[in-house]
Amino acid sequence: MENKGIGKFTVSFGLSFAIISVLSALLVVLKETHEETVLAWMKSLTGHHWATHGIINLIVFVVLGWILPKLGNGQGMKISANVLVIAVVGAVILSEIIITGFYI
Amino acid sequence: MENILLLVHPALGGLATLTALWVFVDTLNVREETLSRIKNVSLLCALLMWLTYFLGGYWYLVYYAADKAIIKAGPWAFGHGFFMETKEHVFLMLILLATFLPIVASNNLAVDKGARKLALWVSGLIVPISLSMEGSGAVISIAVKVGLLFKGLGG
Image 1 (cartoon, each protein chain N blue to C red):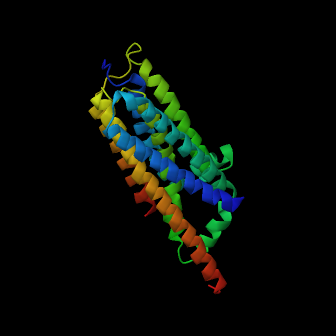
Image 2 (cartoon, rainbow over the protein chains, first blue to last red; image 1 turned 180 degrees about the vertical axis):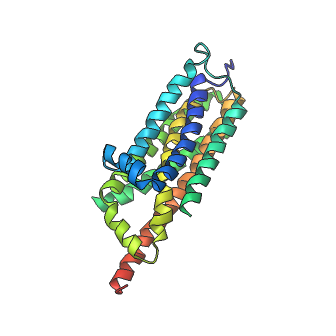
Image 3 (cartoon, one colour; image 1 turned 60 degrees about the vertical axis):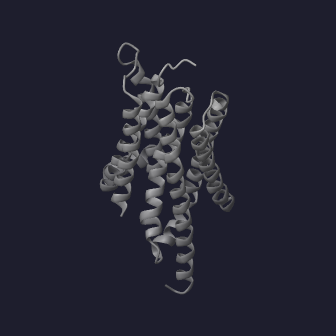
């Protein structure tokens, strides 16, 4: 059984998830506090701000997930599994706090 | 159609939660022979979560406005103001977490301790977040019922 280590796409999509989770939570605050501009713009794109929000999240998640492995001459980002776990779990907790905190 | 969607949406979400729990337990006891099963169930979890998202999203975009008006006019206005608002935005994060699960499961979890740890955390996070989605959905449903009763009583 050969251990080749954690895959570069696992790292890239993990980091991508962490980044977009926090950005998505911040976008919630931004759009809800700027209804005439940001929320209206998001509504104008698809007819509903929530649909636009989901599409933005998906695009950033996929694009970052594909771009990050190309860093470092195609070697991808070198981070340990522990750091990736901290990034993913931390992003989930932080985005939950931002979203629930905003609507409380 | 509307009511069927309201049944299928949380049912699929519940199945997605169970598959995430399956991945968590299977990963705790991972062996070379169980790797393909973990990969398949991880993929199933992501597919079920996306189906939940599309069906719930369709219902939300097409039918929810009427329920929202009832909730906001009733005594359980927090059913929309907190529970639906939180649910719809946390779900956007949950769907990507579920999408990430089969990517993590594509590693050799039997050999790579780091990947195994990551799989446990990702699947382990999906379960409580999904359950909170189910719970929020229940509160939203009750908020509609309370709103209708309130309206019926001339509130």
